[in-house]
Image (cartoon, rainbow, N blue to C red; front, side, top):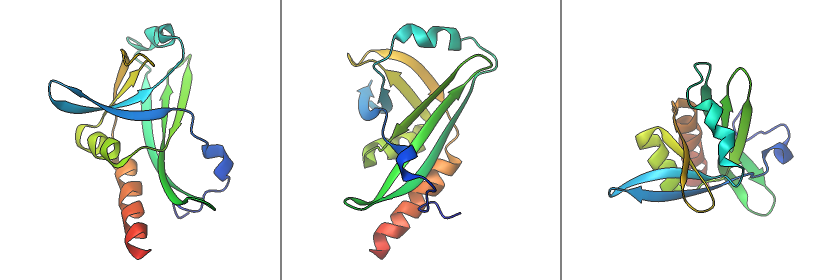
Length: 134
């Protein structure tokens, strides 16, 4: 299925915001989460932890083609899912670093994930291709 043919675009409503901060002069890709930081405490040392970052394209009547991603964090006992429509700097940072930081609304670090970005990069290249065609 082409990435821009989402079966249910309403399923991909943004749940979190992305921001790029700098640590020691290097950009870091962050997702702002307003939930209780203690939610992440059990995940840190859980050997069943899995994370997936999946890029997608979504068409909107008003805004046109949008590039977004879903971040899924899963363990044997927990499942968290984030839907984000990031800016270009965030995308470049994730592709380069393959790391995502979950931060609080006060910009404090809560949790860090190392993720493989193959599918995310594929969606980004598809997005760039569609933009050039427009």
